[in-house]
Length: 99
Image (tube, one colour):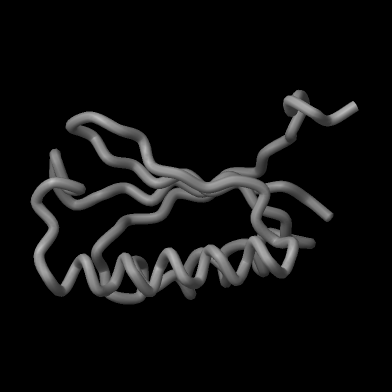
């Protein structure tokens, strides 16, 4: 299984503080989906960057690039055109608590 890192770029600065009601609803769906992917063993870690530039980061596993892109494209924030995704192959080298 290959590892991937996805950056979800917000549409504007200070996005977390200025989300519309619609955007908040989509991000609620986004978070629920990430919780399912975590429970399914797909997601390694997720979280946003803080400050004026809010970029979502997700490290996950997928067998190939096509599958990785499908996981990214199915994200509600991408489907709704709120975030712009960037996907890169990733190698997890060090992780606290991992031998």
